[in-house]
Image (cartoon, rainbow, N blue to C red; front, side, top):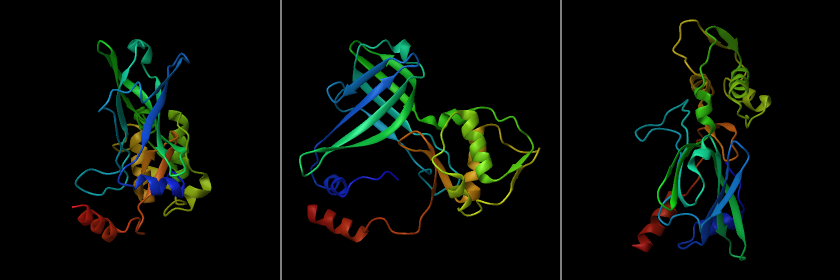
Length: 232
């Protein structure tokens, strides 16, 4: 969960909002290209992120977020292989200032060019865990397996060892037997998340984060329904 100010929470629920998007593209060679709303083709751009399928709630999911955007840009698309795209959302608050919220870090998977535009499709760091997992017989705690995956796939973990061990089943010993269907480090994370009763995501700063389902209410639906009826 990304913490924003109370003013942001108020402004984002208004019927009308003033905001803009910006971002940076960093190539593997270290070249940085900044862009803002003036470079973004109107009516396009998306971020798709989910923790479960559309039909049911699942434990242990390891979905990757996808980002797509079309820019007015003359950048050579061939220089963008595996480039990183950082995206930001800026919302105008009641005091006249803008609050900036990071919307994730993505690695370019496809870059196509039209006459004046550059079309980019990118995914977050979850795809790094698609690397082959070679061990066929191993034991360890949830933290041990998470740390192993993060180190092998060059992704920072958002949690400390103490935080993972404090979760349900966080301090028990887990085993991978020789006969298993694990092929990648992402598969390992899938089973660890199931044991811990949650799901893995890549958070807004590019870290691997385990999120647990919570039984506490986060929004008053009665109020939302009443508001919708008033608008109708």
